[in-house]
View 1 (cartoon, rainbow, N blue to C red):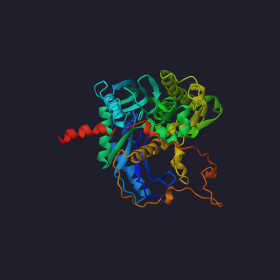
View 2: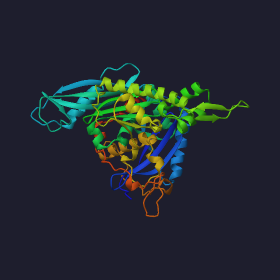
View 3: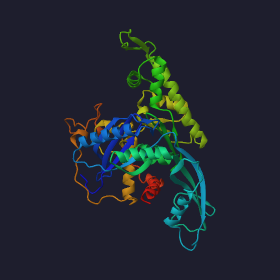
View 4: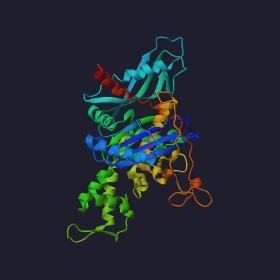
Length: 458
């Protein structure tokens, strides 16, 4: 057990669930999960906190479950994900002429170039969440990934700027604070999910990460090692459940259950003569529902979501087979049957499911490697990146805490760990870790709140 590292906690405030996961890296650089709790979310719609009281209750509930899973934990600071359809992105270009051309380029000059982008004009009521440099130019030389150490007169860069609604950001911050926690940083959810499910080769090959959550579908597109595009699509799992509820005249809970148990994203694959019997309400006769009708409803909404993905890929010129890594589907919605086939059919790109076990130590319960927890595990990875690059202050005294038995996987007679489907985990595919993922995307989110706090102090 490695006790030389801090314990970092991710808090994913989603539309359907709130998850709290505490993790620490072991001596092999893999995440060991030391605490895990979740609760149903009621105060969040389309990824945005609307009812602060309900959200605080749900955060507290998830927090209690996490502490119950490991009573030796103490949780004060969290990395929090942000999504919602108020999130927008734009591309800008910035240049500076250097004062001191006799010397090599240093980090301070790059920081200045990034800081200048925070002055970009954006609509009133929005604020810049993040400024991410893509590729740099020095004089007439282009496509330089890292200009430090080069010589030259003029440095320029293309930037990906992410903005969000001020009130939406404030509501997240307030909910976390009222749950007696402090926000170590706010991280864009598609970037967190991407960090959890991508391997180094994916980043190089070019991929689109599509995280289908409850309230939003988050998209992050990488090409030639650069974050090319991010988007939040305001349709996801909840919309499918509502379509089923309306289309088949059932209750919301029944719609959700049918989607998970019998749903398919491809109507052609659904059996034409299969029916689900639903008990009637208050003495009404039972209802027979065709599995094919159910699949038709799911397919039409899922196709719409994937059409948005194609639209965004077209916008950045990466729709025609340019992404060798194809599409990585993650989030709860990726677990629908035949989702890979539908994605390949609609987008024309290869697809696979992204599990957050790229960075997890072996031996955890299967639940933690579900695509549902990609964002939360990515948030912990973001925290580790801050720690390893000394971007933030972390405690220097690390408590000795073991992985609780409740989060460990069963072992078979040969001493091999066994997954739920009976496959020993040694046989699960091992992939190369993604190193320095966050280096490319310097998050400035928490700085947003510094200004507000300064006002209060003043």
